[in-house]
Length: 259
Image (tube, rainbow, N blue to C red; front, top):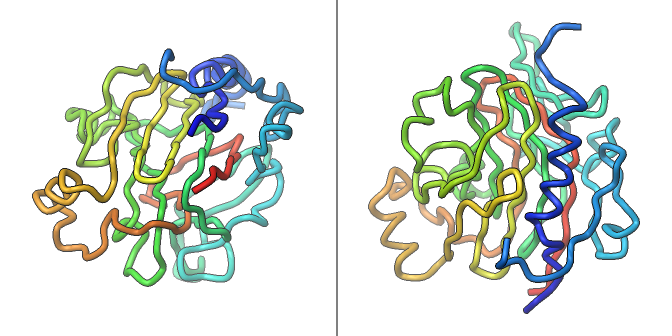
C-alpha cells in the first residue's frame, strides 16, 4: 500500500521554510514515510512539477474559492474570502452579513492526503474536519478534527488532547513544535482506509485507526457519544471551521489515494 506519501516530513519541512519567512499575517503593514519526497512549488498555492506528476490537485489558486462552499449552502459563507494568496476568515459583523458556516470542499473524499498551511491570531481556534456528512446538524457532528489553535493563548492548549494538531479531544499530539502566532504552520492530514495520521511542521504527531473497537470505545467515552455517526463515515467533505476567530489558510492541495 505504498502509494506516494510524498514523504510528508521532507515536503513539509521545505514548505515550512517558505511559510515562516514569507508572510506574517495579522502584523502591521520521518523514517516511517513511504516514498521519496515530492518537491513542493516555490510559488505559493502552485503545484510543483513533482506534485503534478504524483497526482496532487490544488484546492486553492490564491484567488478563487471555486472548490469550496458553505456547510449546507451553495455559496461561500459570510466571513470567508480569498485575497492576497490566502483563504481568510474574519468573523462578520452586522445582521445583514449573511449565513455563517464552515467552509466545505465541493467534492467528497474517502482516502486522501490533504496538505495545508494555517495561521491564527492570539488565542485563535479553528480546525480541519474530514468525512463530513451534511445529513448531520454540523460539520463536527460526524467529522474528526485536526485541531488548529494558538496553544499558548487558548485554554485548550493546556491539554495535549485538545492542543494544536491533536485529533480533537480524542488523541493527543505527540511532539511537534508550533511557529510563532501569526506565522504559517505547515500541516498534513492523511486518511488511508481507516488509518489516520496528522503532521505538523515536518513531524508526524498523531496516528490512530477509525472504526475499530478501540475507536468506538473512545468515542463512547467522549463528548461525541451523543452524536450518532461521529467518526463512522467512510467518505465525506473536508471542512475548514468557523470557530469565531480570525484565521488564514494557504497551499491547499490534495492527493486522492486508492481505496
